[in-house]
Length: 443
Image (cartoon, rainbow, N blue to C red; front, side, top):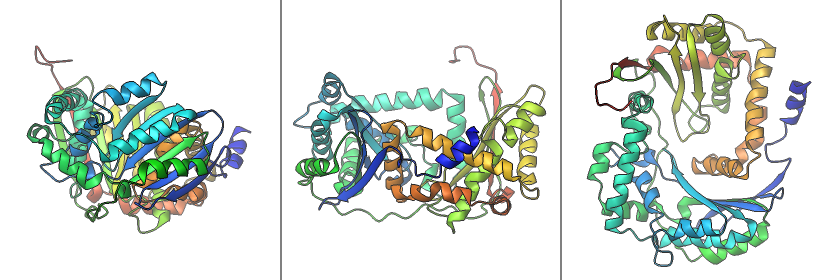
């Protein structure tokens, strides 16, 4: 009964049950997407800049993330430390995040604070003070963040090395936080140029979700953002990997608690696939392998054969350019990384020849769509989805057909993309092999 209810419910676009979405642009090129969600008297504002680590050049990695830190260091109107203090004093929350494809800044308040949120964001979009002394202190914070999350974290370090080998010919191989040598060599002038180059209204999307009215939002956006001039933007190509690069493998022996297997296949996303069906078939393929306890990798290799203690697969159809179809796993006691890889490849290869039942497809479809629907209960999650899609060039309206495109995928479609993309010539593997801890090393 629950499955039938989900299948009927999920044919409706994610936001249709609770909200109305509108969009407009102002003369300087700033695009604004407003979702009127009246369920609670709160509002989230997010400014998304189309800039991240995949825009960076070798030798200059980490600029986008370092600039994100400096965006909280003040303007002539709002001195250092006052931005977040003011937000907190008024009962709000604020933060930011950087990925390979975008940098986003958000504030969450009672809806009466919307004018303040917009004034603060417009101010730092055009008036940021990039002080050298502040930078010297903050870059130390960034380097320590890198040490904690990557250099001293076996899984973080393995994932970074894996990504840098798997994404061989595109800037997606860059770590978002940057390579340590680049952080050590970074100068305040580098950030000043990065800010001037990319932080412009015509390179941003303002997303507002909550108990608001679009007409009133438009007046406020015009009031605070219209005076900020547009700037010429560099031409940016969609990152695409070479096809059939060749099989790659890395052995990484470092202090760690358990061995880990990382497998990845170079594949297209929705923004770089030859056809829409190709990307949706890859998403359904990921679901067949690993979408819930009944999925093939979990049910067969973890629960039945007990070759693995844990497994996870991932594919991002919504990405800027080519991406990875990844599988990570921890072998069970008595099994090697080689045996874990062999078992996973056997399940992948079975999909190239075996049929998938209609019940299995329906279960995968319901699970994927349910996760998307229920994640939209939060206004912040709704804004995140809108902002990400706008920033990678797909646009939020692509979700109108998301459920129907997934539902249209057949067994033959899944078999075809498995045969085409999940092949040795597109594959990278990394074995994380634990070594003994040296006395004095962090555990």
